[in-house]
Length: 395
Ligand code: NAD
Ligand code: MG
Image (cartoon, rainbow, N blue to C red; front, side):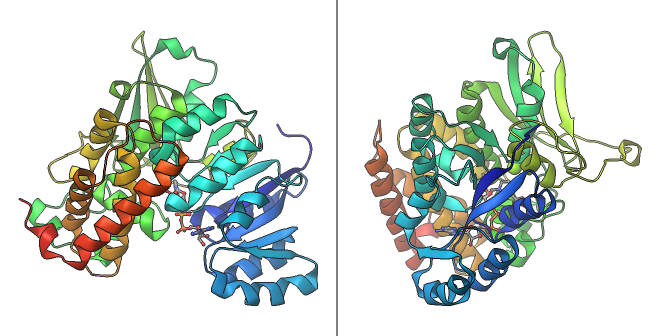
């Protein structure tokens, strides 16, 4: 258990993971202090959180909102800043011990790299960082004192199951998936799904982007990629299984045939707390699970025909290089367009597939290559969406 107060930077403070992290921090002031809070554009929410938590610094990515932030917080003695550079500098401050990366999408990459280079510990919620640049990040971690504690519930479960085990004894990781809101829908019905259908996740309450990723099962493809880099296992040792109740958060199978699982309610408080505590347990982090209330815990094979995004993990592994970066960028553009009603549900996969074939392949990308591939993929995907007929002609 952590004995002294730990200073935390929460990047993505106003979101689903960010606010839950701050609830834990606020409830345990003897253990944690939020010293840096950063958000994208919800300035009033950020101001409210800063008034409550009194960080040294609050940052808003959206420059048009900066004046409002400054005018509200500087009279209270809270420094304010805006812009990507300020965010990367903020995570390196002396009054930051751990960075919670709770921002969404590609925006997590640069501050996470900055934090690793500054030897800060990371509570990693932003899975896109490892999706985009897993090999590169792993290389940086080898040269850094920084440690990564997973926040994603599946990866936290695997991390918990691996405690006290020898990695050489691991046969495979089994990542559970709820199956999302369309698990029982026919392919035809899925093709007509709207954003409001897709936003109705059966078990988890999360930000909009990850909720759509759960509906397409892109989220599970991302989690398979995330697991490869977090746990250093070959891709053929990582599988996904659909578990509609979201009680078993993931499993590890060992060479003697044993399977260990971590169970709990679908609530992110426990994995967030476990990461904040550096892999130790916080009393009452989550409501207890009454196991006898669950007569049926069921498991199914995922269906890649109705959910083709799931196959994109295998595609990324067979191509490697910048391909997962391209998949991620195209997905971000397509999900935003789907949420705005500009494309249909199945166009998300089609946009990614077309973009992956179009953007130049880079076998051993460095940071600048990720920046370039990300922006090329965004431009290509946006142009497809701008001319929607070019997406839908694909069989
Ligand atoms: P969300 O949309 O609720 O919140 C995103 C946060 O990031 C907001 O505070 C937003 O203001 C901020 N943000 C956006 N762009 C930014 C930028 N450029 N700079 C700084 N901040 C920026 O998202 P979420 O559901 O909390 O998910 C956050 C991350 O955690 C995602 O990578 C997601 O995949 C992962 N995750 C979420 C859950 C969950 O239960 N919500 C579970 C597992 C993993
Ligand atoms: Mg997850």
